Length: 259
Image 1 (spheres, rainbow, N blue to C red):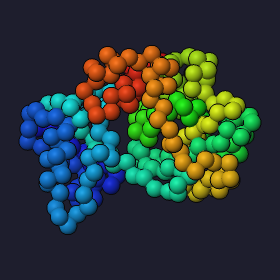
Image 2: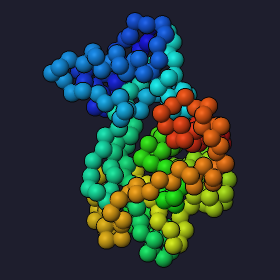
Image 3: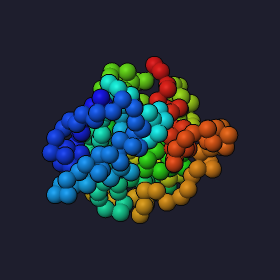
Image 4: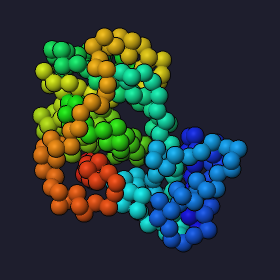
């Protein structure tokens, strides 16, 4: 038997927070198909492409993704990723935490100092900046931040601050100086801010920043640059059984860092 825990909006699709599947072996992909076909027509649907799936507390993206084979006794958590917001921002919910992404224009002359000022002004928000060219896409951000949030809850952060943990995991290193050099914000370069906190504070910060934000958070394909920066070969990518091999390989490297 496989136990499925339904978190957030997933509960609405089944009017329950837990299901028991009578199977000793099935893939996550098959499980999601089974769940979709089981949802009553009167209840909201579940988008299998917009959920985080954890197996016994481990993000499936660092296992074999949707091809991860589930076995008898496994506990699977289904967490929908909810999006919303204006074009200049991407806001979503992840593991009961509200996140927002915005892209600073390169006209910000001292992004490091600017970041520190924002942290002082908004102490109730977690704010981290990543060089935009080092961010692959929204899925990349979700998976890295999910790993950091999981580490925070398990009390195994790579640093005493979650914003530093996020930086280290984007850089796939345990050395802060290396992480800053590799993916940290720099002058004359766009920066993506990853912000965690309550919606009223997020709204206040967005209104302050709006005039210096790019119109779109994700505007370029950075895959070639990222593969070069992290020394990722096509042979490595071919070994990843996934529809998003580069995204999942980056998440795997980030998840296997230890304190």
